[in-house]
Structure formats: structure tokens, C-alpha cells
Image (cartoon, rainbow, N blue to C red; front, side, top):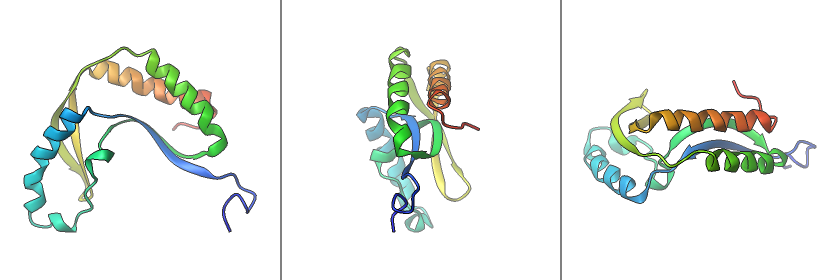
Length: 129
């Protein structure tokens, strides 16, 4: 039985993110290639380049009926934010499970956009902690 059949609206696990340009993805992929040969690397679940992003806000489970308003508010937030430059700088891992790459450059604008992504969710009626 699906969740909608059980009387609950269906939901999606959502987040807002900035996607790096293709050139940055290619450069990062080249830099990561040697890591695939390290001991234990084959046991890890590697995310493909299509999943690489800078997270702005994590929304968790969002009811499908809230998604259109959230999308509209995120679109407005993105339009209100001018272009900015980022570069990949530094890297590390969360525990033994997730690799991360840091950013440098337009961090003030990135933070502004992240704040706008969170505000968009609150205005769309989603709880943000």
C-alpha cells in the first residue's frame, strides 16, 4: 500500500543546492581519481559527478503539495542573487562515509543564497531547524 493510499500525502526528500560548472566537475574528478586506488576505497559508495553540489539548505521530507510553492520561492531567491564565483578549496570527510570539497571565493553571496533558500522554505510553510 502506498503512503497516499494510506491517507497520507506523499513526500520527497529535498534540498537546495548550487551545482558546479562542468569544468569544475571535470577538474575535481581528475583530482579524485587517485583516491579510488587507496586501501578501502572499493568498499566506499562513491557518488557520481552528477551528484556533486554545494548544499544550501536541507528540507528533509517535503509533502508533494508543498513543492510547487517552494520551487517558486526558490526561483525568486535565485533571481534576486547575482552571479558569483566559487572555487573548490580543500577537502575532507565526514566520518568514514562522505567526502566533501570546500569552497572559496564568493562565500558571502553563497551564504546569502543559503539564507534565502531557508527563508523560502519557511515562507512555503516548511519547518526549518
